[in-house]
Image 1 (cartoon, rainbow, N blue to C red):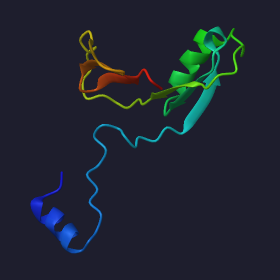
Image 2 (image 1 turned 30 degrees about the vertical axis):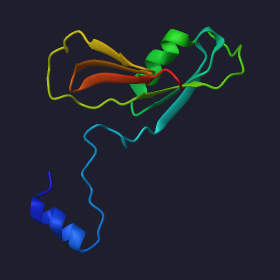
Image 3 (image 1 turned 180 degrees about the horizontal axis):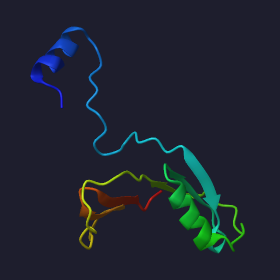
Length: 114
C-alpha cells in the first residue's frame, strides 16, 4: 500500500504509480496448452502444472474435430491465506458477464460473448 506522500512524490516527478496487482490482472501465465474436449479447441493459460495435468487427464482421449476459435481459460493458482475449503460459490449474471464467487481467493469471471 502506498502512502499519500509516495503518491504525491510520484506525481511531482511524473513517474508512473504502481499499485500492485491485487486482482491478478497481470498475473503471469507462462504455461499454455490446447486441449480438444468433445473435439472443440480449449486453450488453457496458467501458472500451474497441476492445472494442465488435470486437463490432460480429463480430456486426453479427445481429438480435434472442429476448426473454430478456441475457448480461452486463464487459471491462476497461488498459495492461499486460509487452510479451509471455501464456502459454496454464489453466481451472478449481468448481460454476458457471469461472476462465480466463493470468497476473496476463489472466484471465476466468465464473458459469454467471448
